[in-house]
Image 1 (cartoon, rainbow, N blue to C red):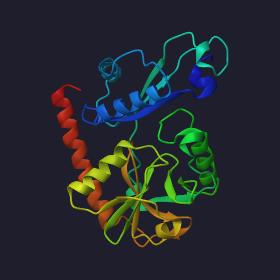
Image 2 (tube, rainbow, N blue to C red):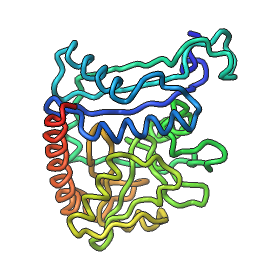
Image 3 (tube, rainbow, N blue to C red):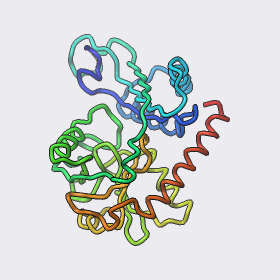
Image 4 (cartoon, rainbow, N blue to C red):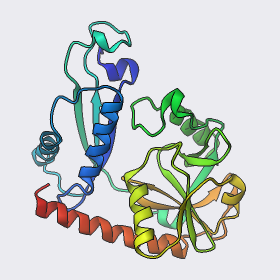
Amino acid sequence: VFDSGFILGDGIWEGLRVHDGAIPFLDRHLKRLWEGAKALDLDMGLSQETLSQRLFQTLKANQMTDHVHIRLMVTRGIKSTPYQDPAVTISGPTIVIIPEFKAPDPTLNDRGLRLYTVYTRRGYADVQDPRINSHSKLNCIFGCIQAAKAGYDEALMLDPHGHVATCNSTHFFIVRDGEVWTSSGDYCLDGITRRNVINVCKANDIPVFEKNFSLMQVYGADEAFVTGTFAGLTPVFEVDGRTLTHAQRGPMVDRLQSHYQELVSVESTLATNRGV
């Protein structure tokens, strides 16, 4: 109970997906984890290679090779007293690896997600930088609660200027006139899947833009979807009670899902060949 994460939310984390015995994009996840640790002045206490080995040792011990989601958590460690100053930390970092057999809901491709725009905003970097994947997720939790109380699946969150930023646990994209739009990235985590989808668009000559856009432009979108490590791409059919033009999985989402699944398969094969 004296752990920094439990007392203060002082830590960082990553969500990982296991595919055919590999962890796709593991190097990018670990790079982001180490960058977050450096920003928080948190000593990881081990190398990326050693942590990677421990991930696979955990999977092997539990006989897990596919359809597995891993929550990797690192906190500053145990404190001598429940106080926020890192100086009262008396141990090395606490590292927790939680692998679960968990598969995305297959019905979501047909029924789509329903999003609700919440009052909680993604804040400025000088308050709490939303680009760091920290354990301190209270604003996202507020958003999640508000959306759930309203009967929706996920919260859509705006930035301080009223532009669309992200969702409470996923990243948000819209499709308009054959173009794929997502937020500027100034007020959201630079998600691994988000970045992969942007790169997939570029590789396949699909116009893609990281830009500011409004709720009005969301309501008038042809398609929308969210991204995340756990489920990849998931279509959105409704925002704030407004049904989008394609009240079903549209052609762009279908195309991007196919490209992304191919990318995951290729990356998994490469990771296996590299021995990671």
